[in-house]
Image 1 (cartoon, rainbow, N blue to C red):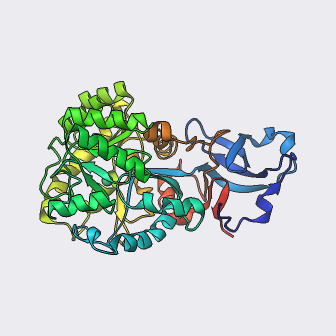
Image 2 (spheres, helix red, strand yellow; image 1 turned 180 degrees about the vertical axis):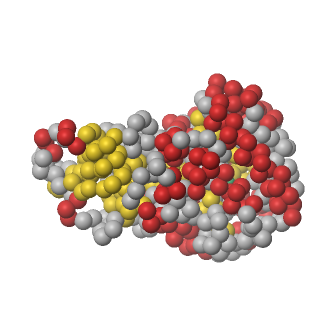
Length: 440
Ligand SMILES: [Zn+2]
């Protein structure tokens, strides 16, 4: 079952070529394909949920002559955020409320709060998200069934962490954390030793994980570890990557410090999240391994600008990391490391800098760090699906055979990348060929 939202009659024609399918077409003054050069006066034909044809308006095949086309100024693929968390922070729980997710009823409360976060994400032009720890994977079936509105969700379910590591809730009794892990009621999961790590990967896949998230270093928002700390042994990391591979999943590694980044790459992870201490040696290994950097600049700049709720230990680490984060993306761009858009968006508080729906702010930081607007759009569209390895759908490009996840924009983002940041400028959103947002 799929929800059909306000599908304007003039945008769909049944059966122009008599094959029982639904067709609609879009004419765009500028068509940005996601990867490759933009096309002036482009056209695109959607058959059911898939793009069937893309090309210049004066070459539209005659078989589509009976389709009615809508017209937009700029058309591009729906954007992807490859690093998000849907946990109701700021409404259901506070950023320091580490006990709260375990209290009775809280998972339900979080689920209710993130319904609107999902809708806002889609309306901001993000038709797909990768969730690296949180409750988005638990509500994804409701989105797929059409009960609520949101992007495609590719979730890791729980973050995997060593005891005392970045994904552990360090100020809560360990047994409470372990009980929550056993019941699948936490967004993080503690595991140790090769056998424990293999079992943890299997448990996430059992819950519906499309990707596995591990912490190969300490972090900023955890309390008692440091971003430079190395977490998980090389044997544990290798075991998790191999176990994930048996189920056609890849691994994303939360990694700040260089030894933890290198260990994760040696183990075969697909993406490095944050990558604060990226240098020339790291960049060379990432290219050799075809690994992808997800820089998450948005959370760093958003939090440094004044989140008063942070613990002093969290703030001290954030202040130490902000310049590293700025330098790391600049060097990665200069050295040609593959980069996918990821924001670490986590807040359900509408007024928070890192609230859901502001995900496109990441493009601003990428352009400031040296990308052209066209490269930044590729970072937001064609590249992120690759962070899912074999679980990726054909998505993020305007190409025949790809998912019809599309957005229209009121003006040209190649001239000013900022237009993508305000959701009001995203005039249309199609997901799977269905229009979820339009001026009418
Ligand atoms: Zn994160």
